[in-house]
Image (cartoon, rainbow, N blue to C red; front, side, top):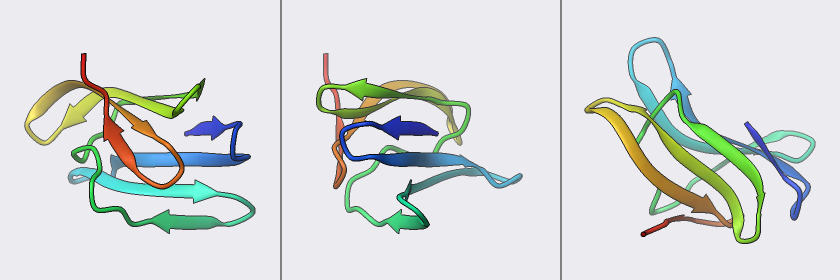
Length: 85
């Protein structure tokens, strides 16, 4: 979970359901709303979300079904964008 201070919402991405990593995006603004998007990070768990970056909420790393991932994504309130070096 991470607070998005620019939008006043809480962001939740992925996690595990006991069998596999998940790849869904949820926001809390008084109630939970699933945000369905066409481009998103691969499903994962054990990742980090950080609030307060200028362009949105930052997601880094985690464990995917294929192993450890070390990619970085940014949520801008409507879509995910992979950050490239």
